[in-house]
Image (cartoon, rainbow, N blue to C red; front, side):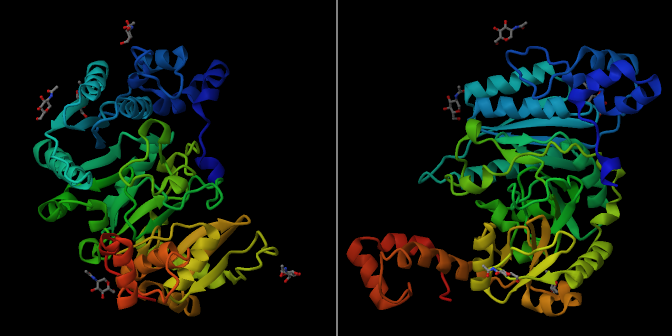
Length: 466
Ligand SMILES: *[C@@H]1O[C@H](CO)[C@@H](O)[C@H](O)[C@H]1NC(C)=O
Ligand SMILES: *[C@@H]1O[C@H](CO)[C@@H](O)[C@H](O)[C@H]1NC(C)=O
Ligand SMILES: *[C@@H]1O[C@H](CO)[C@@H](O)[C@H](O)[C@H]1NC(C)=O
Ligand SMILES: *[C@@H]1O[C@H](CO)[C@@H](O)[C@H](O)[C@H]1NC(C)=O
Ligand SMILES: *[C@@H]1O[C@H](CO)[C@@H](O)[C@H](O)[C@H]1NC(C)=O
């Protein structure tokens, strides 16, 4: 199956073209044909992959236009011209046809260098549009309200005014994988056939090289944790979300139980998007995730997702298989992983947030919690690879009885407990404060006041001591 799905990389294609017969050629054309690859000015637009003249000749000779629109691609940008140029170059080099994907560049504000890049692409490519949002004033150096306002405005525009049915949301700081569009075309069918899925994401939050199976470009998982970072949503979902869209931190809002309402996203084993740190800098989170993000790089797996049945992620069959996988997995010792055998899956349980932190820390998984959920969690199950084995980190109840998988309910108190654990790591474990670690205790409050740090304590947010 895996072998069938894998496509020949296009850099080998030009030599292939010279030797294979015309029938084989035709089957490749659908993929290779792309008017967008006739990049007009190499000094301005650098495509990540070179396009050979053979490809272009073929694409003009055989005019099999798949003229059905698949989705709009909404590219968010504001102040980074180089990042935007890089991102659009990749999007346009990969776009299978301008009939299938309309690119809409949404710029926050009017920075001239960014406007120039956008206009250049509008001029050079078909079905590329540039829209501009009047930038919200930034107060107290907090960029999040401006981001939310821009998102709401642009998504309203593409769904309500331009009336698209499906939109892929991207940002200028992302690099994309070779099969980005193949993935989303497939994901669109998943989105339309399973009510329990509300988004298709190209991002794996725990996608660092050692945590994933780099040979399984075809692997796709369900996740309760909204990943964002290159994701697709439908018009119906936007109609639901738009009226209540928050003034800031919109992605965390998507992770609230009352907003999510038990729906999941799908995400690939291997990320199809990655942060371009060089061109885009630290991003809004002030470099907080830098260590994690820089280890995740966009896939060059090049899978033809149209060959993958959508049932692999459809709830009933997916849940059944996951239950079986957990049932058949072997327990293992976190402290001694030396004799894991490749032919088996393994599992480890957690009872509470301290357990979770201990395990996540060991594997270098993202530890943060939103809406009670860990990143990539599905009913509390987080998966990774270790020593070439699949490992499931599962809630104690599911560990004892895997068939109870879907009865797991996230505990929203975990957000506040997690905040305490981070607080403790910062102030108590580093011996800044040596008394009993309890931010609510008079002693600790007095200590913060003495240091002139009271505001820091208040800003940390609500905590539950665990
Ligand atoms: C390409 O763009 C560069 C920079 O904008 C410009 O100097 C050059 O003349 C352009 N070349 C062509 C062939 O349009
Ligand atoms: C843009 O795409 C639509 C269909 O998706 C097509 O009808 C239209 O001709 C395209 N526009 C251009 C300028 O190619
Ligand atoms: C950009 O917008 C701001 C605020 O709307 C305005 O003051 C400024 O003159 C504009 N700059 C340009 C180059 O249009
Ligand atoms: C989500 O599922 C749980 C468990 O099945 C249920 O108790 C809860 O009411 C559901 N929540 C929403 C918002 O549908
Ligand atoms: C790990 O387990 C294996 C077999 O169970 C044992 O031989 C080995 O000594 C253990 N290593 C450590 C460091 O405990």
